[in-house]
Image (tube, rainbow, N blue to C red; front, side, top):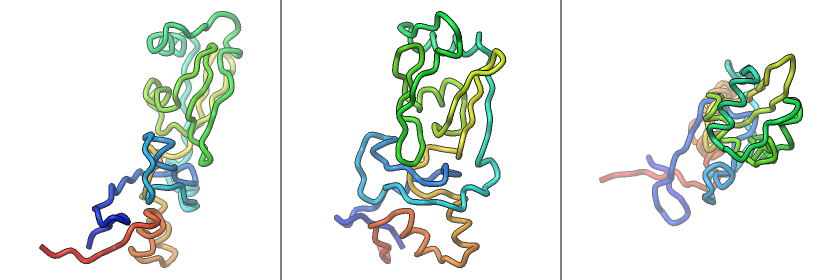
Length: 175
């Protein structure tokens, strides 16, 4: 069996370990609209091991990593004012966050600090920047823990695939 899109082409079966409680629209993460890779609720992920993680970085390391990425960032003054507003997707992933007056992508922040996902909040406390991270992976397509939860609730593979790849068609494949 294979999954195909509305034109009969094999789908891109994107998946990740754990969502932040809902998967992401492909366009929000990868910049490309894909009809069957749309955000869906994934409530089983809330109880997944590793759903919530924290990462702490001291002020000096934070500053060094950010400045190595973008020399235009202004990290003068009080560190608690370095972090500005973030723009998030409907599912909670950071699209952009203002740091030192410059917009940086959530994906870039994830990469710089080795975060488990770009679905995060960041705050400053006692000389450290603290990231609270939800999920693990890019968040697009099927959540592995979400799929496992659905199976434990009695869903079969057809229901799971239909949920996470909404609009894709499961077909028999013979060469």
